[in-house]
Amino acid sequence: MPEPGTIQLEKTDAALDQPWNVIVRNDPINLMSYVTLVFMRVFGYPRERAERHMLEVHNQGRSLVWSGGREQAEHYVHQLHSYQLLAYMEQAL
Amino acid sequence: MIHLRVEPDGPKNIRITGIDPVVLDSLFALPEVLEQRDKPGVRDRLMPPPTESDEALNTDWQQNVTPDLRHLFVTASETVLRDLTGVKPDPQAKHLQQLNFPAEHLNAWLSALNQARLILGELHHVTEADMAITDFNLSEPHGLGLFRIHVLGYLLEHLVKLAGGHETSI
Image: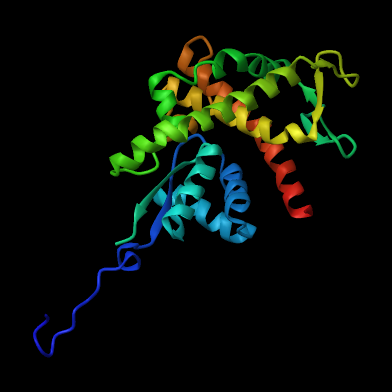
């Protein structure tokens, strides 16, 4: 029994299921136009947003391209790997 | 002067014209480049783990996802290598070649050309600084590899443009 005046938090799956980030890293070979096309195809981003992420990858070495549930993150990483982009996922802090 | 052109040939085909001997040489090198996809460093680049630290997920991925990816890459490569058997003289100029392939093979071409560039990049440890080099020493493997990355990139750029056009017209 909790002490009077304290709140007991229930551990739920939802509480444990933090969002996952999908991140794409830079590599020296992939064409900028190719990376933009892949972001448009995989995420359905309009060209402007796809180019913004591509430039972030190019200039800053990586870009967080999507956040959400684990299963969908795995799907996106799989898709990005199928286009040979250096993508990985990590749990958001 | 005739330049490389990539354009739709009716609704169901794509035509590449103006293929000069330099581009042709890089295209005909594709079989030997692509068959190196399973070399240790190359394999890690083409089929990387999905996380940086979750070993359980990485192992599961390697067992269940990596074989599918490899199959996808091999299938795309085989499609392109079959298409390459259709290279024929370009009627515009004697020293040039042309090639027609089904539009539904476009994704296979994007995949195979990109694979080849990445494979060459890994085999020759190509860096960002290397990619800025414009004076290639073709008599040594690194220079030739770098040169082919750029030549294949030139063709890939044309195909990406075409694919992008298709994307926006859908």
